[in-house]
Length: 114
Ligand code: 5GP
Ligand code: ZN
Image (cartoon, rainbow, N blue to C red; front, side, top):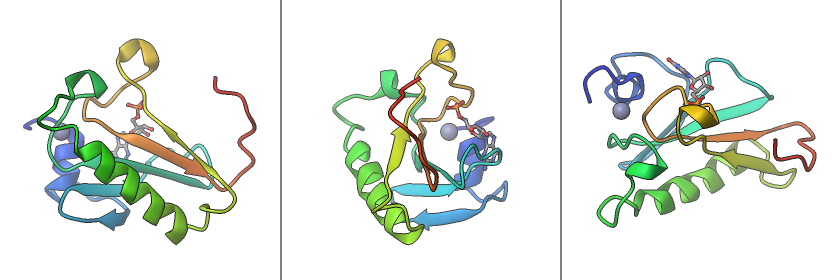
């Protein structure tokens, strides 16, 4: 989608530190990491957020989770643990309106959700 920063990363028009790629999913380091491991996992197709999922496109959620497994292994947090976070909507802190999951780890995250 035009004017979507993450679509531009998918199209390699903007550089990113890619850590994983397959035909459905791209994952890259967050530009402002909040933990030693902070990766954004996105579908290659433009979906604004969870509210824009439907029965036609929701299979990408499985692809994202399977990518998360591989990224966690690759970056050494599969055993220590990691958090997958999705912010849906402005009120939840979503700033980029292309569906993405934050994979955060490499530090003790504790049990607090917010
Ligand atoms: P949100 O707040 O929408 O859940 O998360 C958006 C995330 O995208 C933020 O953590 C922000 O640091 C990251 N981000 C925004 N623009 C870019 C960019 O151009 N490149 C990368 N690698 N990350 C970005
Ligand atoms: Zn997009």
